[in-house]
Image (tube, rainbow, N blue to C red; front, top):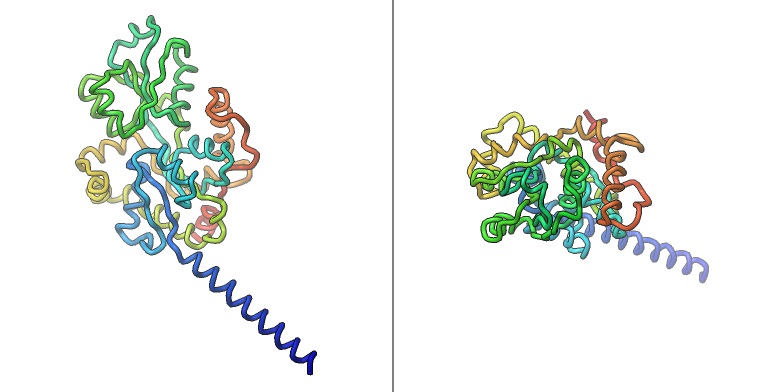
Length: 326
């Protein structure tokens, strides 16, 4: 009798434990994935996919920030599960010890990010104490380092001013720095008002990748949800390429800028579809992983990061799965 009672008690405890685990699992995975993002054309496939229903709004909550630095802080503090960042910014976070992975690439900058000046470049070459303004995160520092590598300028000539990207326009207009590292639409406004373009990412090919970064703590517990989000983004990219006018109209409303300006911005960005992502990310020694190691070295050389990343930052699981479903 005692043995039978113990047996049934153990079975009951086991069943209750299983039910609790199942309930906890579904309660956790049913909560929307929080993604920090700031206003930049490269990331607009996310709100476009939500707007068109290619991503279920019950599965994603976009947390809008003012800058990349703010988005980085959101994911660092644990307030969000993922963020739209550049690859170099993702490397900076991982070097700080944040357990994250890059799961897709939105686009590659092809002229949208640039260095501009308000004085003649030959005049500036002869100067010291050149005031250059940029958001002193990984992206700004990476572009500055690459600029020094391919130009005749020396680091000692510059005074670096750390200005958040959402303040670039007002800072340029009021403080008039000698140079600035910025991107559209701010860059186009400044160029239209007398600034001179010195260099852009067409001169630094395959250095600025806009990516979706996800914390590894939700990487596999939310596998279905993340796959759904990535698939929705690719649907949005397809729409942007096929129905540019319609997509531009919708994106213009998201970014609160004229539709014509959105269309102009397209020229500086190469959006990547599923096929391009697969080509970049597939394999343990993928093209993107190799690029990440090159960028990592540059960031370490300019003291943006102090230590090497111990594990791969690129996870192609989701892109591989969607590619194999075709």
